[in-house]
Image 1: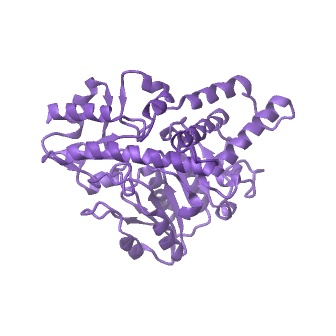
Image 2: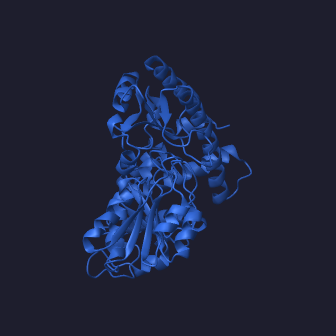
Image 3: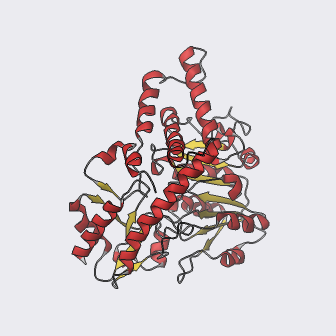
Length: 407
């Protein structure tokens, strides 16, 4: 059982009378993160690379941060970590750099379940003669079938872009299995982990991903993003930075204008929180890896319990259709739960919840192709309730009572 009092005390925003259930849009920030942003700006707000003491200290702090992020992701070296303003921006930069070496007629595969961040940068390449194929969701199971991917792969396939977890369906895709299929075909895999990272541990080497991105502001931190890139693949990429910053300058060649120092430094607060959370719930956890594992284990248990509470109610209402896996199994889904009601548009439901000081949301969440494929545009998209481990059972029950009064 999670120590919810300890958890909620780490998030200043949770101390006010408001229930945050739009966490897939942006989670609340840890106090440790806020303190580190402030501390950096007060004590080390200088440019890096100078010979004076404060600049040298700032450089040391940021190198340490990059080492810890690499360790957290299980990257093989810190140079594999690229920092950027958003996942959307990082994937756009990746597409510009990697495609400069592709030829007209070569192919990319995207899905119709992804957020546009991992679709639009690739479909834009059609203007340069790159062929884009779409791996479509099975409309019956609402899952991506690997057999369908295999039909799309060809000797011309250069990259497959896929999400780790859908920000609408909540379903977790088997990235390790997908990566093997992609690599066996001689292609690369680019994974959008934005909707997965707040809920489960990421091990890029175990997943065998070539590129993996997520946003820190959805994992209890600042508006910043990170991209892992396999070092040998990063080496091949052309520089997007100044002319004197060449292909060997990794990751700086993919960070034009450099990265945000204070926000990057603040991500240490997230990693420290995970360590502490693991220690609080597993006193046998002695090193960084075991503490992180313990943290995400208890987070997953808490989220599964919350998801089941909400899903069991939604399943009980005949007029409601859950868009995605209807069970709470933590191995198959994250607690990002979407539904539609046959008698109401999604915006009508959310707007009736708003006065109760509970933040949920309606729409397509930039997964426009999925909403269109499922013919949910006339409903104004879905109602999405996105939970994380700091939500409580009482909060979910409060939302259910409001739904019961509406339906």
